[in-house]
Image (cartoon, rainbow, N blue to C red; front, side):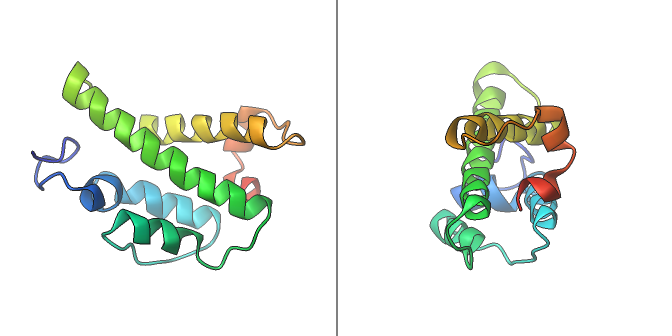
Length: 129
C-alpha cells in the first residue's frame, strides 16, 4: 500500500509517522518549540527514545512525551480518514488537531494547567517549558 499522504512511498511506519514529506515539517516545527535539532530514526521506537533523550522527569518531559503520542495518534487518525472516508490531507488541520488533543490531555493530567487553548497554542515555546 502507498502512503496516503504523499502517494510516492510504500506505507511503512517510519515513513508514515516521521519521514513523509508532508509529515516531517510538522516534526521540525515542533522541535523549534523546544529549540532542538535531531535526526529522525526510521524505527518508531527509536524515534520516541530519541524524542525524549536527555529529558528528566518533570512537566517539560511529560508534555514532550505526550506531544509525541498526540501527534502520532493524530497522524494515524488522518491516515484512516483518508483511506476509509475519502478525507483529504491538510497539514495545518493535522497540527491543530494534535495540539488540541495535547491540550485536552494536559488539562486532565496537570491540575494546575488552566491556560485557555488559544493562549496556550499561540505560545507553544512557553507551553513546553
